Amino acid sequence: MNAYQNSYNDFAGMTVEEYSFLHHASAGLSQNQMQTFMLVYNSRRKNPTDILLATLLGFLGLAGIQRFMTGQYFLGFLFLVTGGFFGIGTLVDLVTYKSIANDYNRHLAYECYHIARANN
Image (cartoon, rainbow, N blue to C red; front, side, top):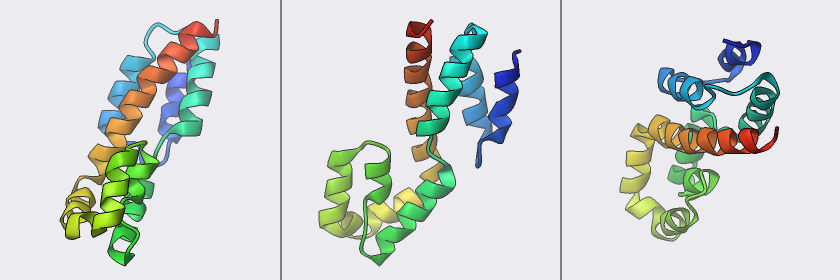
């Protein structure tokens, strides 16, 4: 394990699932590649608490912000024009906000892996 893998603990709101897929996604990277991986991942990662706060904005009339944050633009637009699917979608996202953040971060980790591998 290299020094950068220890810095996973510095991410705010990190879940056990996120730690697990980060450890898996960064396996086999050299020190330089790991540095690139961590820089890119850290700059684009979504904190589950931020997703929760964006979801709560849905109850104030700004539904879908959490979907825009995670790159789900079409779904975010649908949330916005339907009031979070009349509040039901916003309520579901309120319960599943950690899954939304983990799904986004999981895809991001594998994208960062490919960026790091290409950047020797």
